[in-house]
Image: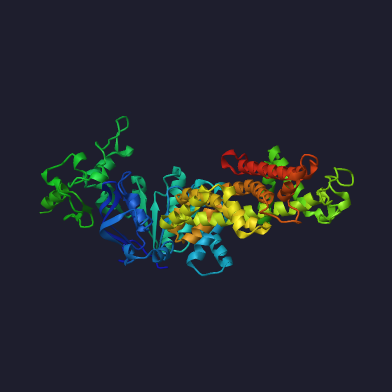
Length: 339
Length: 288
């Protein structure tokens, strides 16, 4: 494995272009994704943050095309994995990709393992599905994987049922499973939400270490800004099914440009003086079934102007092309300042 | 290997622990073991050949020579009840296991595939379920021709929809579990998901249903035997014996009573075991 560091290779393992997805409902459609553009390069760890209902998980599921195909419509946009347009692949071709090129870790380690099968057997099954090696070899490989997860007694864990293991241990097994076929991309959908803080850190460090070793890129979906600032090189902020800000983590955290990101970060307990109430963003997320044809954040934004009646595009700032913002006012200001 | 033996030992000891906590299940299991053993050991235990006619000893009341008395051609009813157990219990086991095996596979695939496959399969099953099961069994058995084997096939066919419905219901729940989604993210095919995830997790209620169904199938086989569509003379079978003894019931009560009691006791045994299994396999009642 080449030691892929962020930015060293230009190969994009995941590239979502202006993706619009809607779920048809009675008399209308829920517009879950409204122009998501995101890219993950090989070996990179990218964060995807946003509040509940902002479309993070739909993004993750679409990255693996896990949603039943008759329940959604792609109205615009493409999803490419290592150059392949996965929306055009057959179910069979998609199956060959899942697990070997992309894999996924779920939020609930408690229910993500089959309760009536021993852990070892579950890992062996996944390995045998993608690699034609003997069962004994697969067993050896499984034990190796478990050892790499810093599991003290891999033989015992191998012969355990999931209910005999703790949440952190199960999440480690999920990580071992996800890495078992050395995928190019790992989509981690809130992998640490169900774990307590110390275990959370161990699991994240483990994820990062494994990713560095195998050159796997990680798309880390979370709503925890602290996790993003520690583990991600770049971050995408989602709001109402669209990416509103995109940039290097330190830029976004230190100098959030989009009013929504500013509101999010201002609400963190560490940014508020003790004894004063936490800051919140007033108003509510718009109803995705009746999305107005204006900036989706307009009704909650403190800076709305006439131009906000049009939907803004995600454009790079003139002062810093690596930082992209979907806000008319910020774009205008930045242009004025740069001139 | 040692771990496997240890885990097997652990599991079987846990099984016995659970069993001891439920006396009714123990009684059920005891009855079943007793009935199965006496049927299997019939050649050793039976004092007479069940099919040999002895016209000098017709319709004798129970005595030390003939424990359960004799029938109208002088055959020993005790021996016939023992041998009849082979037929009746055999039918019960065959029907329950074959029907649950086929029904579970159909049901799980139906639930996983969904869409038109599911619709077609379930509508066929609905049609089969809409006809009273005994009437359908009789019609099938009559169409196939009266013999014990055909009766068995008929009962099996009629029992399949119950398992399909049960397995499909389980599958619809399991399908939404995170571990099935996770298996999909690792590239598992539908067959793999059914084989490794769905069937294994759907099994507990199906095991219960199967156990309860053995008694049911024995009753059905007896019912078919009673109306002449099951076992044919001279084969000893409990239902057919009850039927034959019906004409002598007023004066020779023992003729129908003993095979009838055998049916009753065996059915009770399987029902007790089934109920006990339900309690044991219900995770909500699991005590460590």
